[in-house]
Image (cartoon, rainbow, N blue to C red; front, side):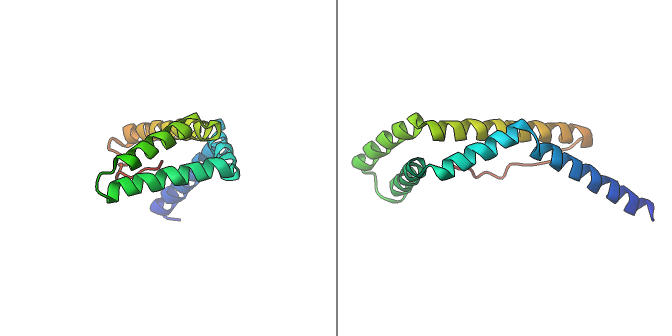
Length: 122
């Protein structure tokens, strides 16, 4: 086996160990559980979908104060929904863990490992 192939195998093994460690982490498991709860909570899902639809209406239509009012009301309902709160908290903790992981890897390789390209959710 060549040195390059041996090195590649070692990297793949380390990556697999990292993935398993991440998968078994409390932070990831909390995120998965919160995601399952959100998917099982029809009221919370419907509330989020309605909120996102109103956001899109506001983005695509001319300014309409009635849509803005509805959006504010929906935002309050979204913010007060326990299932959504738990999901967002778990999501933020998981993102923080991934950012910390990125920082450690970037420091070790002395360059930015993962670069944000924008996007997002909710």
